[in-house]
Length: 232
DNA sequence: GCGACAG
DNA sequence: ATCTTGTCGC
Image (cartoon, rainbow, N blue to C red; front, side, top):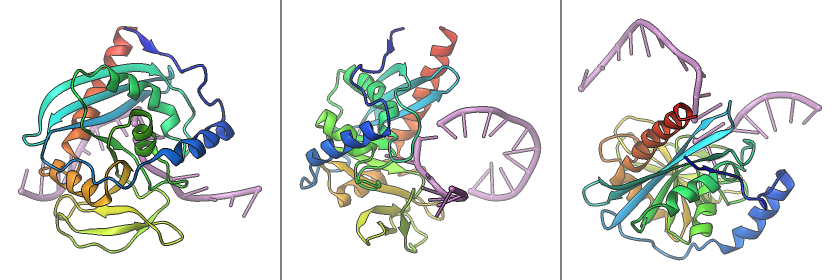
């Protein structure tokens, strides 16, 4: 199995990564509504790490958005490309995630990834970064509020509250996907509106707290990581 | 300086 | 993210 090595021009330290975010941030597109929910294809991406060997496994799972059935799956195994620094998560995994996405036959349609898009210290989280690099519509769905705050929200599926930055800007939404469970934190990545991102998330999380896309991708990347270990 | 901090 | 047993609930 081929391993994806870190590109030679990849940022080597924090200042270099910050400079890349500064440059790429100008290319984010926020004025498109994005594809309608429950139509076409939706692709979930996720990664699993083996910190011992500095290896990351990525999975991309394409679902039929109407039926939530699997259309295609792809995985890639690569070198961890950056240390974990909050706010610079994307630099760790993007080369391997891109490899998995590029090996798909189908058009990915809307991409759903773990983590944030605009809800980020510099408004350029993983979902925005992945969107700019691929040109695809991307949203970010995270399990934690990161550095942001949010108001009280109702207890039912579909209830939400704005996710707020220090300056009061709405950078995303805390969205309840099932009655009585902790909310998810949805933000726009690229070429999708916040309303659209939330509508997609709700549709994809019709049975469980997490979107079906991330549940499928999470399962697959863990399997890919185990296989990579076994295959040495 | 110290603590917090997506995955 | 990852390390991990039993346990409460539908």
